[in-house]
Image 1: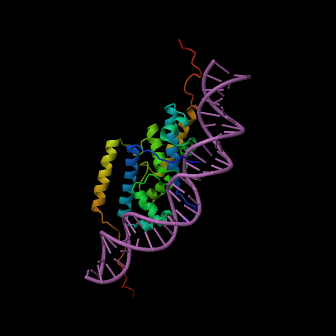
Image 2: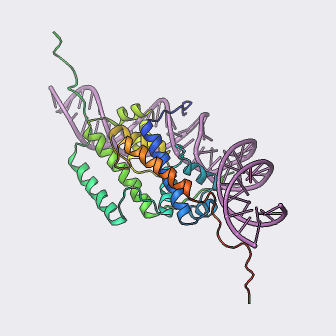
Length: 112
Length: 112
DNA sequence: TATCTTTGTTTCATATATAAACCATAAACA
DNA sequence: TGTTTATGGTTTATATATGAAACAAAGATA
C-alpha cells in the first residue's frame, strides 16, 4: 500500500519541469495549434495538457515527452538517429560497469 | 471517468525515455550507489526506481527528473542559473505571442 | 567453496492521476 | 459593440501507478 505521499522535489527538478512546459506551450502557439488540437493528437484530455504546460510534476513522463515531440520540442537536442546512437553508447558503457554495486568491505575488523 | 486507456507513443518518445533511464542507471553505478540508496534519497520505492531505469513511460515526470538530478544527469545540459535564464526567456517569448490561438475566419462565405 | 548483498520479479491494497462534464472568464474577429 | 472561440478552473468516477512485502537468482567478497 502506498504510504501517504508527500514528495519533495529539488528546485532544479521543478524548474526543469516548468521550463519544459513553457517550451511546449511556446512551440504549440508558434505552430498555431489549439490546446484541444494538441491534446487530441496526443490522445490526452485538454485538462491534462494544460497541466503539462504549467509544469505539473505529477504527469506521466511518456505523455509529456509525446506532447513535446508533437509540437517539436527536442528533449535531448538531438535527432532520432543520434538518439539511437546515444542509447547504444549507454548500453556499451553499462556493459563495462559491474553488474551490482557493493559498498564497503562487509565487516570492519579494524576497531582499535 | 477515464476511458480505457491504450496510449500510443512515438518511437522518439520511447527512445528518449529509454535513453534517460539508461543514463540514470549508468550515472548511479558510476557514483557507486545502490538502487535502494538512490530510491531512499529520492523518497521512492526500489521498484519504482527500477522501472525508471528501464525507461518505463508511465512514471511521474517529477520523480524521474528528481532521480536524474540526484545522480547528476542534467536534463537540459545546463546548470541551474542558465536554466532560470531560459525560463525567463520563454516567459518573455510567451508574452509576445497572442494569448489564444484562432484558426481560421469563423465562417467561410466564399462557396461558389 | 560459502555467505552476504544487490538485483529482478511478482502480487496486492490503496492513493491518486486521468477523462469527462461542467461553468466562467478572456481573447479574437467582424 | 456583439459573437464566437479558446482558455482556465472546478467536480466526480474510475483506471492505474505506487509502496510494501515476499521470493528467487545473480553477483561480490572472503
